[in-house]
Amino acid sequence: MQLYQQQDIGNVVWQDSAEHKMLAAFLKNGARHYIHNTDCQLSLLVDKNLYLPIVIPHVDYPNSYVCSPYGQYVDYGYKEVDIELSERPWANKLSKGAIKLFEKCAPRKYFDKVVFVNNWLLSTNLYTDISIQQLKDITDLLVSKYPDRAIVFRSVGDMLNHQLLSDLEYLNYDKVLSRQIYILDPKLGVYKKKKAYKDDLRLQRKRTDYQWVSSKDCTSDVWKRVKRFYDDLYLRKYSILNPQFSNAFFRDSIQEKWLNYHFLQKDGEVHACIAYFHRNGIMTTPILGYNFDLPKTEGFYRLDSLKIIQEGVQNNLIIHNSSGAAKYKKHRGAVPSSEYNLVYTKHLSRARKFPWKLLQGMTKHIATPILNRYEL
Figure 1 (spheres, rainbow, N blue to C red):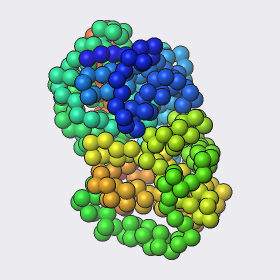
Figure 2: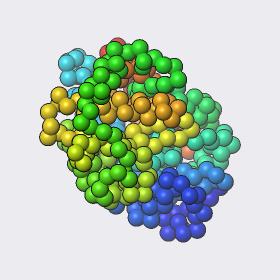
Figure 3: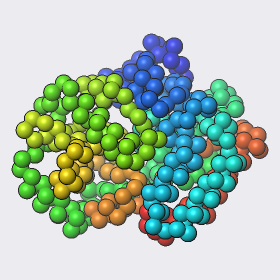
Figure 4: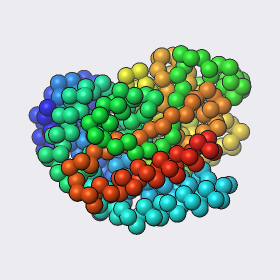
């Protein structure tokens, strides 16, 4: 098992794949070249055919939640409460009170002292197979290299990553709730019976003036529209704490095919898009957007969501539908699942362990009951 720092990246033997092209580019150019609100050190852990990006956030910078536990649980936590609990005053007040209490107990400069394993700096990380011996070796190596930092595996789901979750708990990692996600398995065929899915199909059939195309059928500057669509939805509508992808990210990810892009086009102009990647039979969509200049009646979000289902069906992939818009996703056949941060703190002092233990208790006894009660 070898840990390569950025200056050693020339010694890595890469495979000819989109994933490895993306990893190599991020390690060569640095995270902030591609995501403006990430200030972190990148390295790469290699063990035979296992290649895992390692992310060490700089603790004095207000990072995006993709590389900051503080950004996820505190900064974005307040935003999520306002989005999901705006019409439930008591739950809103209780949740914000809990976040405020935690904020006092866990300053950013201490809580963000972590090492992320398999962090691709996207909203969702997908996993390849990792043996329990490899997990133990990874833990031992990172504890020796970063003795003052907690070790964190993001995006570990109880439904999609059951074995990984079990193995990490066996190795004394703590299971800390991250979010509730939604999973759609096309093989079960539930989506076919849903009225919302049938309505989306009818909408698609009516919109004969729009066609889905791939990047090879678009102009070389299509990335400019994709970036605007993404920024309008994720940054302007929701939160600047989402990854702020740069021009270079969209240009390179389209040209180098890091992600599977699909564009909804009319008369040669793109009006909506999705981009997904898949691993181990699971797909997730970190990029989705549409033209905010046109009215909602165009149904772009519905057409984007339908395209995701169709890609999952066509490629026999389970769809990781991320979090949020719970009712919308359940009406199309997705089912809820809990996703966790798996955190190793055994080597840290009691004071450094305390915020994670507190957070584990708060998410278990406050966040989980609220998620279940309101089906968020």
